[in-house]
Image (cartoon, rainbow over all chains, first blue to last red; front, side):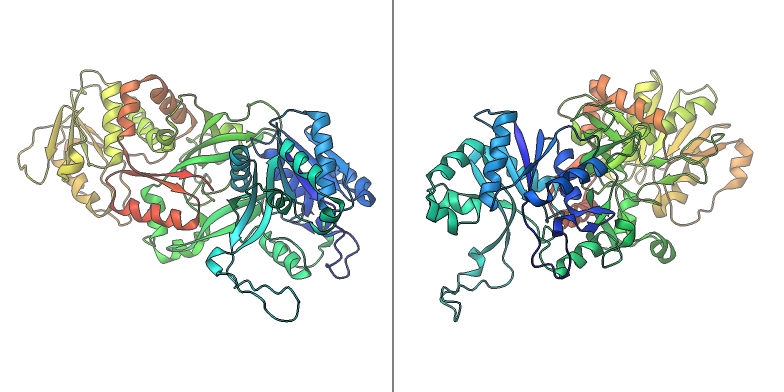
Length: 241
Length: 340
């Protein structure tokens, strides 16, 4: 089976004064996360969708599903873990409960990237099926600079070889289990990105084509941009509540 | 759910924009377009050949009204996932006395409503026609175009007099080709003559009874009826030539679109008692018949395949631009394999 995993473990600490995590903020008449879940639900190759949500917001997400997606029968909301990779591990536990087949694939996606397209999901499924793991990227337009001391530049990689990572990130479930089990406690503490784990254990992570519009709603400016894209009045719209 | 639309915001400029579509709209399914076909009408908008007032009123707008796709989500579970469907661009008005395609309050996609150049579209059951022939999706993309031919020929059969021994079709483009194919299919024993000016395009019409390069011929025999599929600036010349050579009480089917008013030899129309009938769009039953023709009639389906001059895989706005540029120089249809 092919699973969509919407990762919503964040609490939105960079979103200024808003008291709810950013994935629950309204845009285009519904919470941002609903747009994401809907895209995965309509995708013809996705068999089932699992939402991994911060435990404190589990009931809130369950209520959202009840309100906006009452007929969704291929959808489960589960509690996420302490960090991104442990949330994925919880999702995989749920996948094994639902399916448990050796060829299961999971397409993981940030709950705050509502502009993901059907094509990005399709490309992820295709590449993960062929190569085991892939990451969605866009070519870097700004020059990426590297600083390992946070004081001055220690490297300037060739721009034509640099990309910005987005999501979805997709992989074969069994491969993730293998890689995750090989990670030490110390490694898990510093690695926040699933694809980085695969790289560390020697698996090539293939590139899937993203798009600049698939941006992550991180700062209030991003939220405003998402609202503009969806034709909203900028700011929290009372009619959206 | 967030949907991406590819809108013409001004001539030659297509932008990706978002809209919010309702996943659970009653009686609607979500369709992902798979193949789109560029029509002359789309090109007139894209290249800014409509008058400035029309462009100002209608843009920004999503182009393309010829498309097929796959059902990806049906909240009522009537149509299985991956059901292949042809998309109908006509949104019929209220006065059912008239055919759905000619009601004054009808809305046509890529004209007064957004067309099919979208990531996905919410369509009601009445505006999709399932098809099942495997491996021919690109041909089904221009079913709308074929259905216009079906509609014109059926209208002709319903109203013209019954002497139909010789019919001439003016034009050497895709529409003339479709009309000739349908006439040959429906009127066994009737001699179909095509008249055009482009020798390369006329080569394609080897299934009709007679091919005449009108620029090289001065004397013509008489035809019982005629179809005008020329349109554009040559429209008037073509219709007046038809008026000259058609037999009394013949029916002249006008199918070519002209942006300019056309002066006609009304004296001869009256003298011969001719009937001029305009047909440009089609309704659901025409789509159903067009789909059936392509599913069941192998020769017809193969002929329609000949109409694809080029196919462009579309992954980005740049590919759309390439498709429209190609359409300008192609003999017949340019099909966009819609991979966005």
